[in-house]
Length: 363
Image (tube, rainbow, N blue to C red; front, side, top):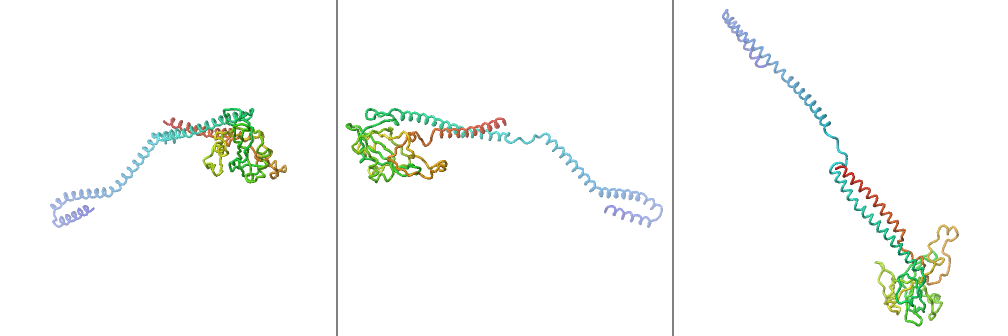
């Protein structure tokens, strides 16, 4: 634009100079200059037009380039989307398959442990069933005369002895709780020495349970000794080897007369007998009408039994055959435990197999 103005100024000056000079020579000299000036004006106009059109052309070129780049980007994204596979399913990657395999291997441990515990409970059930059958057979057999044999028979063998009681040397083991007429009562187990008449043999006899007041009441004790001190008696019972004290049972205190569990050798020495004297426990064929019974059932309440009847028990109260065949955990309980463990084992192992299969399939 500035160059055009300069050319216009130059042309004006030349025309003024030609007019001032006059003549044909000046006119002839002016014609080439005028033509050159027109060419310069045309060139200047073209340059100005080109300069004005340059930004618009550049903008158009930039817009065209942007459109071409966008189209190329869309084509590239579409091609990449077609060529690229979709996301892998969960658990089918190498990392996922590894985790699945390790999870399955980990579940094999508790599954195997549960199966082992189920087998152990089943073995306990079989062992206890055999033990109960053998014990029941020994208790229901013919009683052996314990004073007539030299070797001591197996525990729970049914035996009998004849002799006289030494009631003054009785020992009280306890305290023990027993249900009598549906009521829990505190008491003791009374153990009395029995000596063979006219012979050297002797035994300790667990005569049964007595209430706490029986220990202090001489009249009540006399009722439990109807045969008298010097009279011979025949006692049938079960041969026992004593009791296994639990971890919370304190040791016996023979010097103080405190007996917390049945230890035949200690009781025999305290009663003036040899330490190897056997222990015989008196057992009844069937329990008494009210001995060992719990609280009244709903049927008994509806029938009129609202409380334990007022009866006079005869002490000592021995155990029954059913009591000797009872465990805190019976074979049926072991069966239930085994079924529970095996069910847990089956469920856990099924989960383990499923996890391992998924891990192997993903590899």
